[in-house]
Image (cartoon, rainbow, N blue to C red; front, side):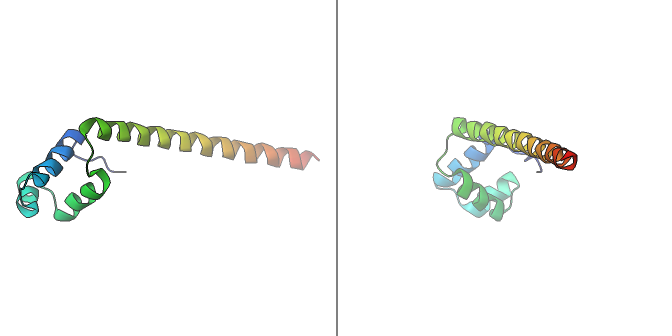
Length: 88
């Protein structure tokens, strides 16, 4: 997945700026993002504080790590199962 050039604090700041009354098009142009990007962020992070966003990012990273670990273990399990089946 491509790493965003904006960190959690910047995303929250942009969302908060529009919540406080700024126009979406002007805010997007000012920060160099597209309107679809803004609305994507809004659907994902609406109402979250910076601490919540960083915690969400940490949980997503941990979840990805656990998924990779499970995939490795499942692959190893199937390989060992094939070896045992061949011996019998």
